Length: 140
Image (cartoon, rainbow, N blue to C red; front, side):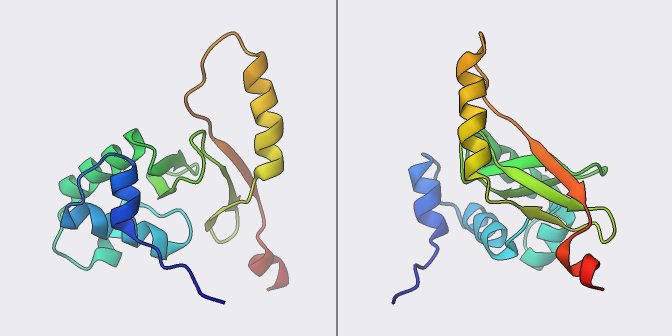
């Protein structure tokens, strides 16, 4: 069985964005992180070569074009992850260790789409966060 290789350039092109070196690096960093990350964490992952302003501009652009999602984990800084649905997806915040995880939320999204269809307005984004104690902290 072959493993599919992630290609940040393809994701950017599909979103109608130019594949600049910095954009590719940020999308790749988001993909490799595997869970929502703060801009500070992303800067550390990028190991120099990009300043904070450039990173924030790229993150804003990625969110605007549906490549990434931005969410508030109850902290001062937003966290970012790759988008897997135009309306966003659910997250889990561990109240002990502070880690945030993306959740597979297909059942939630089906019910959520029914709710959206019943509303008299157009919803362009949503954020759903659960909080509690993660599996790692529970077993510690």
